[in-house]
Amino acid sequence: MFNQLPHYGLVMANKVAIYSGPSLTQNVLFYAHEGAEFKQLKQAKKWANIQFSNGLKGWVELKHTDAI
Image (tube, rainbow, N blue to C red; front, side, top):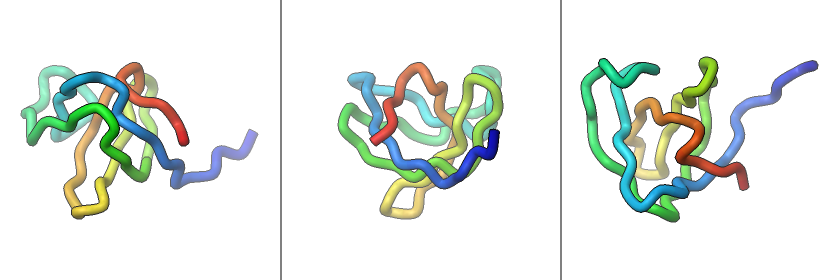
C-alpha cells in the first residue's frame, strides 16, 4: 500500500520529549505539549519525524500522537 506523507497530527500526551533521532537513546531536543499540531515528514517503525509550524523538527514516539 502506498503511504502518502506528509500526514498531520496532534501531540496527545501532557508533555512529550522530541528527540534528535528515532530512539530513546538520542538527545532530547525539546518538549512538546498536548494539543501541539505537527506535520509528519517520515515514519520509522514506532517513531515519526515531525515538524511544528514554528519550524522545529525532531522525532516522537507515535504512541504519544494522533492523526488529524
